[in-house]
Length: 381
Image 1 (cartoon, rainbow, N blue to C red):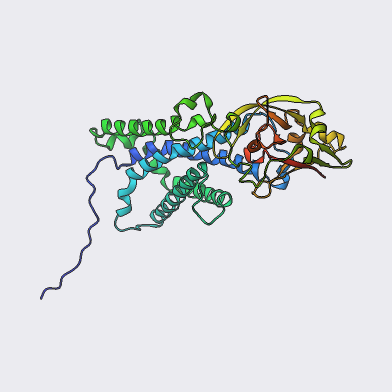
Image 2 (tube, rainbow, N blue to C red; image 1 turned 120 degrees about the vertical axis):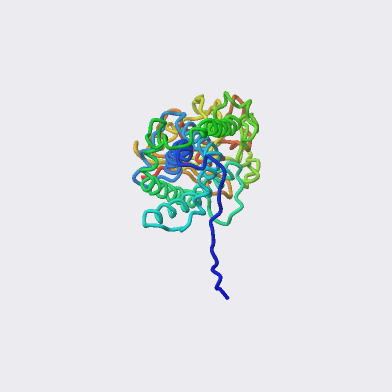
């Protein structure tokens, strides 16, 4: 009997537009979204967790700086989701190429793609769930999200380096390589790119209003509305969730620990000169809104304690649980005249969920560091 040989043939893809020109066109947009998301993510990470050499030099101006950078971070991450799906659609037939590894360069290409796709999918999925404050995983979000971001960037750089000749060939319509593509694909390619652009526009317009409030009427998909919450301002952590009950006025004490320490009752705090500022609360989840805050300047409290001019300040909350019950400020934030220990919001006494009786509000600062229910200020050498 004649021996039979098993021959495995790769699948045949008859769909069009799975070509380098289409992949490069979408890749430009996706790359731009990744770069914006990564850079603004670095800003957010180092503002929340600054190394010692940076902790005292984070600028307090512009006052709206973190609001813009974090809004861009979340918006670019959401926009990258349909872009990544479209990019995968254009290139997925190459996953079935045979033989799977043809050279060292081809092996590097496939390695970069595997890491890039896996890492990017992880970052976008976990980042999106973070905006809704849903964490269905056993690990800590912030350090893992930060570490994988660097992994994705490394894979992206490797991928661009390996694919540079092909990217250069198909970068623009005038590139010589585009002449070899079927002419009939032109209209279909434009239709596909238009559809992808429409999808990116749709998810952006229906979510970006949570930080760019002129578009708040278009919010359909964002987990937060900037007007929904106590005193028309959203809240991430309520007083109940933080283990803080109603703090009675006569029981409250503010301790200022410095070279000349002192303690103030709430009545004494209210009797000090009050200042009014308009500052945004800008949350890491992507929502933000400006509000009118009234209270005592932190710099006045520090000067009364004879704090050195370049000293950092530790702010301690009365909350019983939570990862951000303690925050620190560099001297630029601590000495900025816009930084208040706020007692009132939009002309009203603070709601307990907004930090009654006193909370920190400072310019260009992540919302998680705008400590609520403040009970202690410590001057750090």
